[in-house]
Length: 202
Picture 1 (spheres, rainbow, N blue to C red):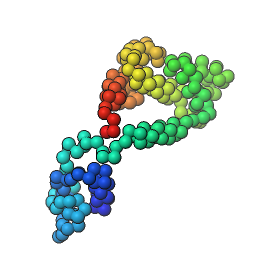
Picture 2: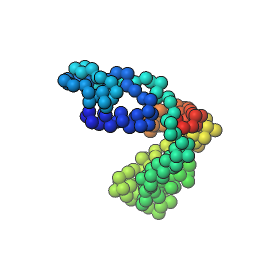
Picture 3: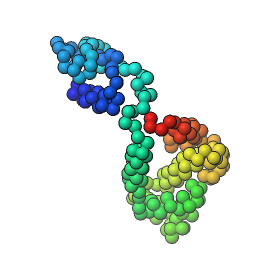
Picture 4: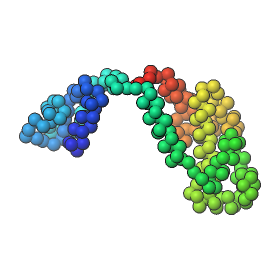
């Protein structure tokens, strides 16, 4: 554990050379402090009730000296590509997903989707089960993705998004969105607006 902590602190100092700990404490006892001072820059307190390191919270708001907007954009693009490849699917799940996307997330019902795929609803249900998913799960997945994209534009209200996704009432959409993401649509939209307005390089 001590080796890992020392390695983490070394990386932190490489990123932000002026970083320094205000206090360091460990549960265990030690007869020497030299190695700790060399690794962490201060003598720790031993026999404490918890292992703890504290630093000035103002350090967390400082931009990194080597921050670069182009590098951030490149890394973000690479991450998005990795996520997209990971999420990429094929087979019956993808066929259902594509038809739900064409409908804008509106739930046409399993019978209608099965008809479009020239399958019976029973066969579609069985094949989705074999693929490890369900029609309801795919509807939720498509609706969540479309909802996030629509909210991210900042143009449509929560009520408008709910209507476009086929919800009769905004309250039903709000409940579903919170089940998907753990937050309300309004909170999600505010978070993305704040992210877009944040200064670059932080």
